[in-house]
Length: 337
Image (cartoon, rainbow, N blue to C red; front, top):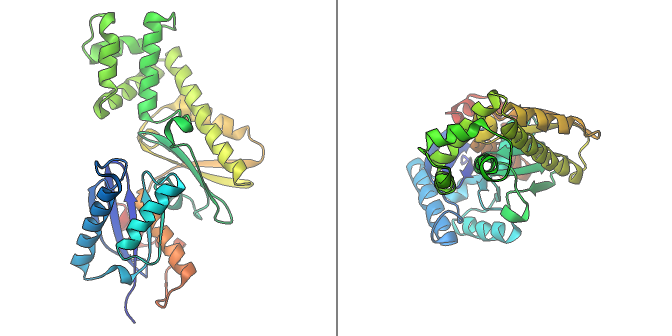
């Protein structure tokens, strides 16, 4: 019988990973490339189709396979937020020759990779923020990640902006004194308060500037700075509201896994944010939330999801592996490269 394959794609606004596994869950090959997001490419959906086609073609060509040999493919894509976006992206995937596939927001991949059974909530706090949940019946819900509509109040860029606002408040609006002011002035070579607004705005326009401001805020928190601690407390509460809101909408009960993903959760050390977040989750009576940082690459969640869907569809090629076996297998270890 002809061998079948699984394809998992994690398409973010910066990079995209394409992982190919066989129908037994064994790792075959992968491609790492730039973004395929229609929101990040200058020619939008046409650019997304071009980039996906090029990279998948490269992966398939060197392994001697075609889209018709894919038992299931999962595309977790940035910018797949609204129904019309998912429809447009699904049409692209269909034109590339796939018959059995799923297109969803890339936030769901962290949940599939980090939850013991693929059910629960994933709270992403990275460059931006989004919360996604999958209920017992498979119902999916996304909260946030929609810009001004969802009033997202987390993510490295937002945190850095709030830090600069705290310095501005201290200078011009009778706000709390903050050690962050001295740190920022020194780091960005600001000698005159009149130059702060321009230099702060410039810093917030670059990834390096945002990263440096976040690190300064971590240090200010360690020093017990009241202004920064206040900002982090507010953000922790906002993130908790998203998680609780997701649990309520999906009618979750009992123990609910909460996967914490994104660079701020995974690499940052904002203790105030986490403790406030956890305190508000613990105050919600209908669920017992158990929080764990994501330790696997989200693309592994795409492969696991493809494995689950292939087993449900059960094509003419038998799918031998279970989700648990995949998580415990050498194939999964190879995905964590």
